Length: 353
Length: 232
Image (tube, rainbow over all chains, first blue to last red; front, top):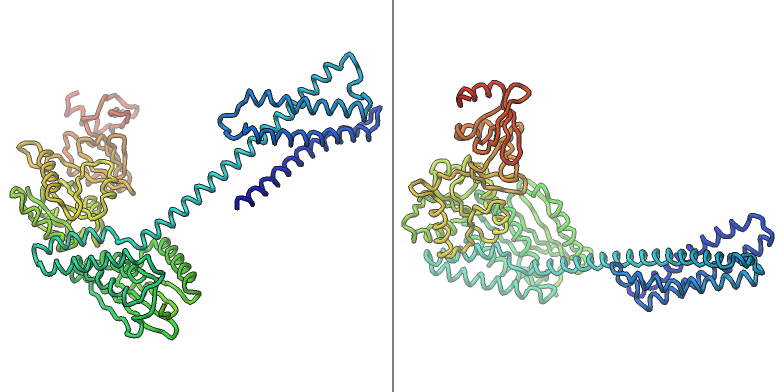
């Protein structure tokens, strides 16, 4: 990953270098095409050599900048030092220019002794500006890359945080349920001590199951059903006859495996969106049966699907995806409303491990 | 003081009743298990304080408050919804977490008794509950500067807020003190305590400038009546 980033960075760097100097060379060549006493070809060759030298010098300058770490902190650039250091590539390039002028053009530019100092000065100012602009572009490119990286890091962090949150939620006892249950139990202590003692036992069993649920990728349905029954008994304490439960688990599916908390989550949703929202009695039917090579679990509650169920659909899609990863393409989770019932169906391959 | 318990769970209601048994000055006058039943009980029983569950089958405790013309002392009881209660713009509401600690209940009751002016009932300080989108306010009537009609709704100006109340201006006018709250035009009711200056308006009526910079026009007809009444 890091290496990929480095090679692509290097590629981008050379692309920009060649493009920038290429444009400069093209401009030079275009301006050479106007006739002059020393011949077009000679001028063109001299300018191309000059640009090639510029490319090399700027590459050297780039390495120097990297080595010194001058551009590491964009908000605190050592401007004075940069400004002074820029004299080095300027002098180097000007010397090269002078050499090329003498060799190729035989003093075509720097011929007049009287204006030699002025010409040299002009050339140096020009190249100082060229390298200055080069440095500015380079610093801006670096800063953009840094910002993009920071954003990517933030995204990765957010994704991993969401992931951890999801995992934690999956195996957590719903606090709303937990505190309401404790409240019910405290009321029972004064009304029916035996019922209170039983309720504490159920709450403890549920809690123990849920705390251990993350340890294995699958659990036997019988274990999950036991925990769900304890949970539903607690909910019956809270909701009295508002919760009308029918549970029908076929004998031949008890040993089949499912992901831990899968049935629990469906049962919790049936309570939350069915019973909790019903003023009167609300039926909840839980069924599990074998269908050939498949295990089918259905949790149905009287009521209606929430009208704004787009988040539910996203959740279902994610669940189906996760199930497919773990159990293959036969695994599936659906939610549908028909005739006053909301049905959640979980389909898994019938496996005993 | 008269108390109403609103919670959809029977055991939760009986537990609160038991806890309130330790306070002889509190009389539980009723129980309700839904938003609809709570609104009805509040109307008929007129309790001084309501213990209100946040989540109920047919809505929330906020829905109960929003349906009331005026709100008694409110104590929310929550299992794990205190964030919803804390989200209030005006934290005039107390909340208790279930299972309720007896000391916290005593504190909440003491706060209500203290808030009531001596010799007056706890309801003297009338408040109105406003829910506008996600935000809620519990506003004492004497903090409202201006009520502005917007169709069937009313915009309520107080402090630096102006949420929309889902009730018509006429509905509100019926229960406001007509001396303090003056209907100055078809669209406006002004709290006279907040009027800073009066002047003639271009239409022949009057222009009222309120504290905080709002200006409201009084219609010519009403301005005439107003001048007569106040002998200006």
